[in-house]
Length: 417
Image (cartoon, rainbow, N blue to C red; front, side, top):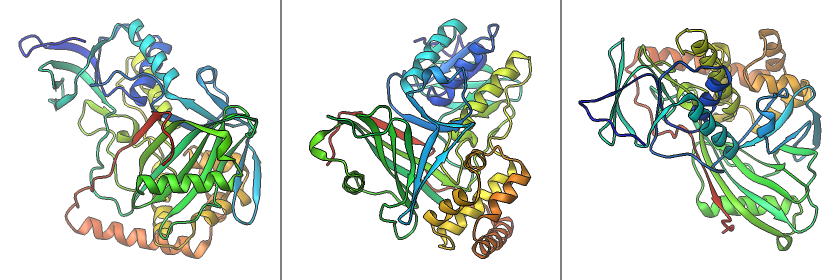
C-alpha cells in the first residue's frame, strides 16, 4: 500500500481503477504480452483473493486459460418440460473458472510488472485530454496517461427494457457419486416460470460428488432470500438429489444487468471502461467473461505495440440491436423464454447458437439464428423497439435507474434456509 500527498502525486502511464475480474485479466494479459516498460498503478479498496465468484463460458480450448479451469465439458444438456436435449459442443467446450486462480495469476503479474497498488477507493477522475488526475480516498493523487476503469457504473441513461439476471447456487458435496462429471446442465427449464420473465436451473459438476447447482431468473425484480432458497430446494428435489446425503459447502449469489441501456466504453478521451461498465455483459444472456477476456487481450496487445489502450466494442452494433429486440419480445410476453431458447438449439447447430450468444457470429449465421425464432412476435418487438427509439430521440434523456452493474458473492459453508 502506498500513500501519495497532493504535493507529491504519483505519475504513471496507466492507472487501473478497480481490481476485480476485468483488472485481473488485464494484468495477466499485460504480463503475457511482455509489457514491461510502463509505470502502472492499481487503485482498489480491496485486495482480491480466493473464491468470491465463478465464471462460466464457452469457447475453443485455450492454452492460457485451460490450466486455471475448475472443469470443462464437451457435452451439455438443455431441458424443457417436453424433452431433454444433449448437445455436443465440439469444437467448443463449456468451461467453469473460479476467481481464486485468476486473482493469483494477477498478483504474480502485478509483481513482475512492478505495479504500484493503492488500497483505497478512487473518488474523482478528471481528464484534461493530456493527463488524467485520480484523487483517491486516502488523500493520494495519481496522474496517469490513461485510466482503465472497471468499477461498477450505472448506464448512461435508462434502457427501453431493464431486466436482471439474478441467481443463487449451492456448491453441493454428496456422500456418494450422484453427478456426471462428463456433462453439464446448461439450462433446465422445468423450474416454475415467473409471471414476467424466465427461470431455469443448471448443474456444473466438477466431480461425481461435487457440483454447483444453481437457480437463475431473468426478470425485472429480485427474490427474497427465502424465495431463492425455496427455488433451489425445489430444483434439488426435481433433480432427485437426496438432501440427507448432501452438504452445502458454499452459497453463491449474483445480480447482473440485462438491459439495452448504453454503457459508454470511453466516457472521456483518456478514460476507458472495461468489464460490465464497458459493455462486456451481453444484454440477452448476462454472460460477461468472454468479452471481458477479449477486452484485456486487445488492450494488452495495443499497449505492447505502442498504441492507445482502447479495445474494440464488446459486441457488434447489430448484436446490441438484436439483444434489444429479444429483450423487448421476452418482456412484453411475445415469446416465452423456454420456447425461445428451445427453438434456437432445436434449429441450429449448438456451436452456432453459442457463438451467436457470445457475439462472434457472421451476419449470415445471424440470419439463420433469427429465422429459427417465431417470426410475428419478433416483428412486433422490432417495430416497438424502432418506435421507442424514435420517441427517445424526441424527448429529454431519462435518468438511468439503479441497475447493479454486476454483483456476485460467495459465502463459505452457508446452509440453505
